[in-house]
Structures are given as C-alpha cells and as structure tokens.
Image 1 (cartoon, rainbow, N blue to C red):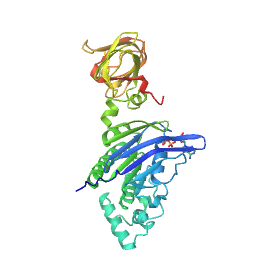
Image 2: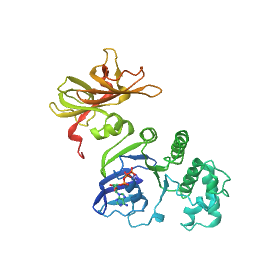
Image 3: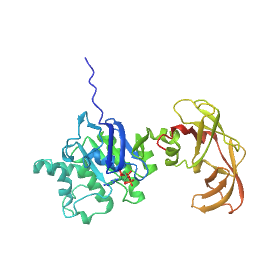
Image 4: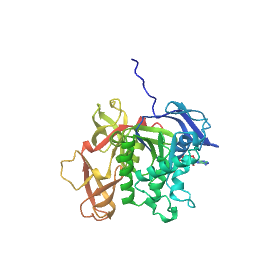
Length: 365
Ligand SMILES: Nc1ncnc2c1ncn2[C@@H]1O[C@H](COP(=O)(O)OP(=O)(O)OP(=O)(O)O)[C@@H](O)[C@H]1O
C-alpha cells in the first residue's frame, strides 16, 4: 500500500511584503510540522508581527510568495476562513461582552448554532481552568484570567495553527512562567501546531521545538533552540542569544569541532559553530556569554584576557562587571565581591563555553 504523507501544518515559500518603500519581509521560506511549537524571534522591526499577521490573513503579502496551511493555499482566504486562531498580547477581548460571549465569538462568525457554541465555549473554559465563568464581565477579571479567556476563545475554534503574538507580554513574571508551562503542556496534549512571537529569550529557549531568528525581514537561522544557542550561524545570532562578548580573528587551527583563532593579541580556542569545517586563514568571530566568564580565576581557563574595570554593579546573586580590554568592552557576571573601578584583572573562560564562527556567515549584515 502506498504510504500517505500528510502535508506540513504550514508551508511558506518566497514570501515578501513591503509597506510602501519599507521592505518588511524578504523572501521568507518556512515549513512547520504538525504539532510543532515554533518561536519567531528577532529585534524590533525584523518582521515578526508582519509574518504573523500574514499567516492570520490580516495582511496580504504584496511582493509575492505562497502560503499553504495543511497543503491548502490560503492567500485568497479572509481571516475567518483560515484554520488559524490568534492570541494577542493585549487580549483583544470585547470588554462589553461577557466571558461566555467572548469565547463564543469565533464560532459565531463561523455560523455555528447557539447550543453548540455554548457547549464548546464551556469546554474551552474548562480546559483553560475557568469553568462556569461564562456570565462574568471581562472587567471583573484579573490580567491572567483575561489571558486565559483569550486562549479559550482561540482554542474553541479548534484551529490547525495557533498564532501567539507576545501573549504573555502584559503579564508579570511568575504568572507568565506559570501560563507558559501550562500552554506548553496543553499544546503537547492537544497536538496543536503553535507559532509564536516573543521577545523573551529564555521563554523561547525553554518552550520551543524550533526557533526562527529574523533579521531585516529575512530568516537568519532556523534550528532547534539548542543549536541556535550553541551553534549560532552569525555574530548577529550569537549576540541576540546573549553571547554578547565578541571579538574577531583568523583561524589558525581548523576542523569541525575545536578551533583556534589568532587575534593579534594572542590565540584563543572555542567550539566551531559552522556547518562545514573551519578553513585555515578564514576570518572568524568568537562569542561568549557573560555568565561563562570567570574573574580572577585559576589558570585552568584555556582562554584568558586582561581588562580594566569600568563599572561593577551589584545584582543580588552576583555582580555585573564591565572591563575594557584590547578587544573592546567585555561583560563578566561574577559571584565575587565587586572589584573597584579602575583596577586591572585577568578573566577567562574555557574553550567548551564559547563559539567560534565564520564571519562570512554574516550574510545579512
Ligand atoms: N503598518 C505599517 N506601515 C508602515 N510600515 C510598517 C507597518 N507595520 C510595520 N512596518 C514596518 O515593517 C517592518 C517590520 O515591522 P514588524 O512590526 O513586522 O516588526 P517586528 O519584528 O514585529 O517588530 P516589534 O518587535 O517592534 O514588534 C518595520 O520596518 C516596520 O517599521
């Protein structure tokens, strides 16, 4: 018997969009498997919201491209005829309607009969742990409860893809954490495909099956959270993932894992992040996270630099120390007592804790 292969939840091909002269998306290619949780990250203006709005049908791409959900072309369809539901940061609930009416809304516009609307809304509220709240006014709910209503309203239409636009952005930290874990659990249980936009790096790393890093309307990296964090394709992605201490050099000992660069102020080692082996003589960047640096440490660190303290700030669990070096400014997060401004210190890190990548990969830069 022939094997039937079902199409992916989402296929985006060569999608481009501009607002007047401003190019927002540039030839985006993206495939999302069924049941996957994909997170789109990128700096402000990189095109995250535009992409989400195009998927939902609120924006029509005007520079070409193709968009299929479950193998079906979607670009001709208005938002309410697409099998997607969106949860926004600011809930987008109707304040004058009751909780029940808000949740039923997506079914109402799809022409579902009243009795069925009621039953499905009750079920969705149950899933979101708000049972029996149908008669409450939106104004009588807390922020966290409002966001649960927004999720219930999205889930009630049984969407093939749930689009989340910074859905936790307006909630405080503990509530956000709790709701994130709950949404992740729910997504796994229901098998819903989720595409979310977030500014929270930790949230993106913890929640996602895959990360897409956008830069200037292009996909800069599309990989698992671990790969994006540990093997960023470019200096930009490394910086975006928090590996903000960076310097450049030339590869003097190559390979596919352990690499050494010559910096002009000595040699430094790291883990190669490129897909193809490092080439001798090629220009490369080295990037390391502030948490991976140690101040005034033993000689065990394979990479060591010296710097003068510019600023040291107490941060509770440790201090954030800025040092001026031959390579520019470095930030060290240290659990030691803050050093005095102007004093000179050695600091270091192990090769396993830093990445070295090709400068040629800075394609969009
Ligand atoms: N309605 C609009 N009219 C004109 N330009 C727009 C409009 N919406 C977005 N843009 C521009 O398109 C580009 C992409 O914007 P978009 O909102 O998609 O980015 P984003 O990554 O979601 O940013 P943020 O993180 O700040 O929300 C930016 O240059 C932005 O200024």
